[in-house]
Length: 234
Image (cartoon, rainbow, N blue to C red; front, side, top):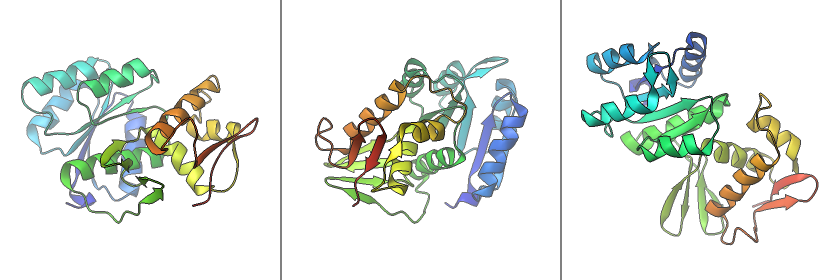
């Protein structure tokens, strides 16, 4: 299946944001986008047309995205139809709850357009074998696919979160050079919502756990004390 054959449903009560999301998708080759302002309209769209992926806001005027997802699972819609939760809440408890329900991904608003496209591409490939040219980045025992948003390590396939993927991508683009903490935080949280530097530290720790052989003694994702981080040249 090609991108132009994918029908994506955006369920979000922020009309302007939905339009922006649609424009981002169309610019990347997705041409069949459906919109719903509430859960009632979303149900009607799902019942009346074949949807390949849902971008589902967590908080809507007529209900909760988590409850809606569970409702559709009970009637047999999921897990056949993949879903990515969208939320303004960047709390681990919410993210883990959404993923724990069986959702394919969870991304926090605001997000970089590239982040969104990478996550959507990864989900569609897992579910529908969407063909794209991919090039893995080899870091020791790990093979990282930026396009797929995954790490292959010791026979396991590990999914990167949106923030981990964005962090890795920034460091990879600047490999061999120091990327300061300020720049990383501005890229990952453009609205300034990251709060303390600890947020970045936590994401880096999780990224190392997925990539490095010994996360406590990283070989590729190095800390430059007092400045930031860098990825060693490959």
